[in-house]
Length: 440
Image (tube, rainbow, N blue to C red; front, top):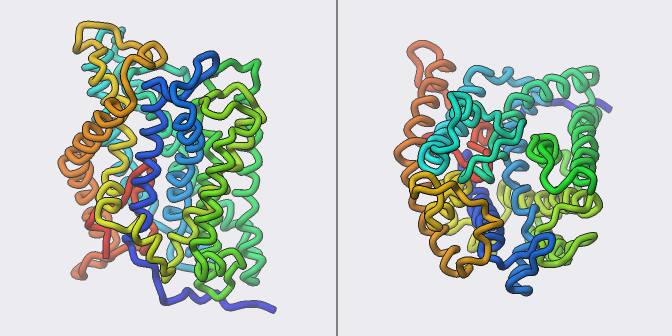
């Protein structure tokens, strides 16, 4: 039996406060994990944890706290392409899509790169390429260590999936257009993302084999995070299918009992605290089995956290209290900056780098020379302050300008600017969000 594919009239609001909140908590979680290692709380390889209980709890966040960022990217950005395939809406404007993606990721990242290169790593500059390499997001391929940019390898990974998303969407569209049956369309659309999930799982295992060493250059390549990105794409398809009346069982459970899924995410986190195939309280990367297990735990955790927060109309006072309060929403808005800057803040707090007349020391050399509460306080205050300045002085003005250009580009002459598909264009790099002008 064939099903009509008329586009539903109900649309999800552009701004979802709960998703801002989950970005905030994940960014703070990643910052806490890195700070705990530097402060000597979490152990690694032959270094014992400084505080076993806290080390176990924080090690449980690694790497699953990073997953929701990429899932949100795939889910929110693919929606407009999925509508094109499922409902026959116009193909998204790729020039506007890429312009907004660059505006979301690059300015804040470039600011970080310039500060880190010229203030912390000035003595290491051996020519123009040293400066251009990070600005072009290419430092992940040879791996060139630049103090202060340690966690920023995820930004080139994110950008490359922005480039790949229209190609994946085109392939999924080609597979789905051969049938008018709505269920078959969905099943065919899920094939390419499923292949990416499997390929990323193999890649994760491959780069974490003992013979590859602790941090092989390929560790920083984007393939290992592809599974989370395409999981978000698959979730976007299921969300649109639910609008059409084809609601998946878990989607219905998440809408009716959202705390059940969030509780499942807590169980996944608790299980990851045990570091299966690894050592509780350590941040090791030695075991392919551990890495592969954490890869699937990351996907499961991300799905269980994001799904109940993304479904329109889901009601929960607990979720609103945790994810949709004013503090969480604000930190979610600036969470990209928190993610970018928390490592650089540590270098400035330690007073190591060219601006201090020294070579920047690696964090494994500095670890344990400062107490966790002091360093975490400095990281929180410093990264939130810098992220706020970056957001309001750099990121938001550029985003607003690009959005006005995109609206004018897509508006008929003499008409008001057209607002694009709700949920289609939030900023979605690790810790990012849409500019306020994108909110209806």
